[in-house]
Length: 214
Image (tube, rainbow, N blue to C red; front, top):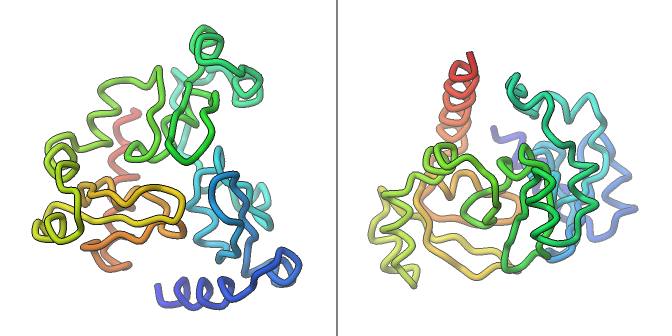
């Protein structure tokens, strides 16, 4: 995993899209309305939610592997292209889409599938299955951790809580599980497992989610 860190260190040194995109096999220029444009490694750019960030040098062949298999029940779901045309919460929800809110990003209508992909610790999206929300949020630890309003109290529960910082979003205490779901290229969170352990945990979760589809 040291290679990922080396790439991010190299790419983050570029401050313009032209210098960043000069290394198309290594770096990606990412733009989002409420977060400063920044150059990330390809690997980190792939972890950012595509419904919010527009990153260069991610061709379709690269994007496809990180998309989870779509369950049969979602084959007839309303596509992102249709949902993005709704400009109000009422019309979005009436169109079988998901209206997503976040303090630092403009409210927007997304497909149900994309709404589920946004980190629940930051975005509140409508029409998301309650059972899925409970599984993702880990309600017990998140409820406890969210009561801590400073980093000292939060980090005192280092086995359960993580203090997360991001320039455009207020600092907040989350459960370890929810902190791991936030894009590392945007949020700096404490008490997280090592990069290797996080990779293994995420791989295990992906296997469990895939098995649950069948």
